[in-house]
Amino acid sequence: MVLWIVIGVVVLGLVVLGASVMAVLGRLRGFDRAMRKLLRRQEQAAKLQRKAEVLQETVAELQRRAELAQEQVAVIKAGHGTA
Image (cartoon, rainbow, N blue to C red; front, top):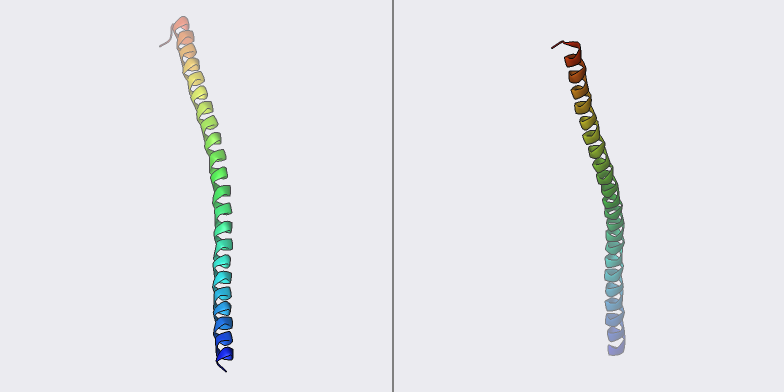
């Protein structure tokens, strides 16, 4: 009789342990999915940052060209004698 009680307690303990392991594994899968999402977003952010840097360089170049064009217009106006 005592043997059956011991076996029952051991089996119950193994069932509880198995349920706990399954719960932890479920959470780990969720963490893995979240980590992959974060890595994807980090890659997207890095791409956007590179594009923003290129855009900033383009804007700076356009600004330089606009200033050069204004200087040329001023030179042309000065050559024609208008203010």
